[in-house]
Length: 224
Ligand code: ADP
Ligand code: ADP
Image 1 (cartoon, helix red, strand yellow):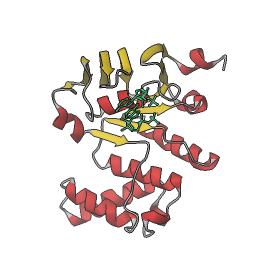
Image 2 (tube, rainbow, N blue to C red):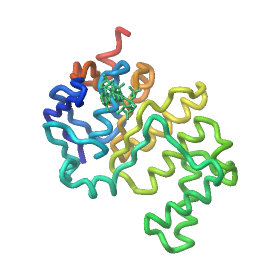
Image 3 (spheres, rainbow, N blue to C red):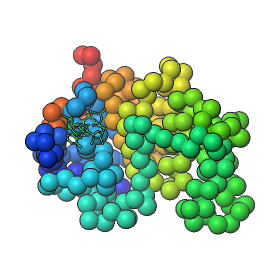
Image 4 (cartoon, rainbow, N blue to C red):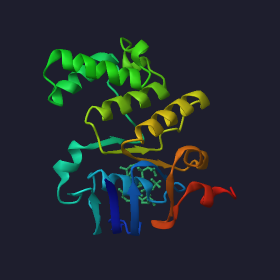
C-alpha cells in the first residue's frame, strides 16, 4: 500500500497558489510533512482527505483513485484536523461505543472488546468514564486517534498535533503514532522540526506550495 501524489496544484479564488505541482510517494510508516505556516500543508492534507478539490493532479491510495472514489477513501481514512473538537459532555467509552455502532459493529460484546482495546492502545482506559470536556489537550488528541482507528484506516492524517502539548504528552502522542505507523500510512503535518526528526522514516519539506525535498529526515535535518 502506498499513497502516490502527482502534479497536484491548487490556486484559491483570492489568487493564492497553495499547491504548486506537488508530487510525493508515501509508503507505510510515519511520514513527516514539514513546512512553515502558510506553506500549503493544510491545503495538501485537506485535499488528500477529500475535503477539497485540487485544480489539477492525481492522488492514488493503493488501488483507490482518491479524487474520484471519495466514498472508498473516507471508509479507510483517519483524519485529525488541527482544531480537533470533541463532545464535552460525554465520556470516552460511551462516545467510542456509539461511534462503533455507527461503524456497523452491532454485536455488543464485539463492540465492548473493540472499544476496550482502543482505549488501552491510546492509554485512556483509566480515564474512560471521564467526560471529554475534562480531558487535557494530549488526551483529546489520543481520543482522536482512538476514534480514527475505529475505521481500521490504511491512512491517518494528523495536522499539527503537538501544538499546545507539554513534553510528556507530546512524546506519548508521537510514540502512539509511530506504533500505528507499523501497519498504516501516517502523515504527520507540522512546522516543528523535532517532531519529524525523532520518529519519521521519510519526510518532505514544503514551502510556498512546492516540495523542496523528499527523503530521510537524517539527511535533510542533520544541519538543523
Ligand atoms: P499551512 O497549513 O502550511 O499553514 P495552508 O495550506 O493553510 O498552509 O495555506 C497555504 C496558503 O493558502 C496560505 O497563504 C493561506 O493563507 C492560503 N489559504 C489556505 N486556505 C485558503 C482558503 N480557503 N482560501 C484562500 N486562501 C487560503
Ligand atoms: P493554518 O495556516 O494554521 O494551517 P488554515 O490554512 O487551515 O490554517 O486555515 C484555517 C481555515 O481558514 C481553513 O478553512 C482555510 O481554508 C481558511 N483560510 C486560511 N487562509 C485563508 C485565506 N487567506 N483566505 C480565506 N480563507 C483562508
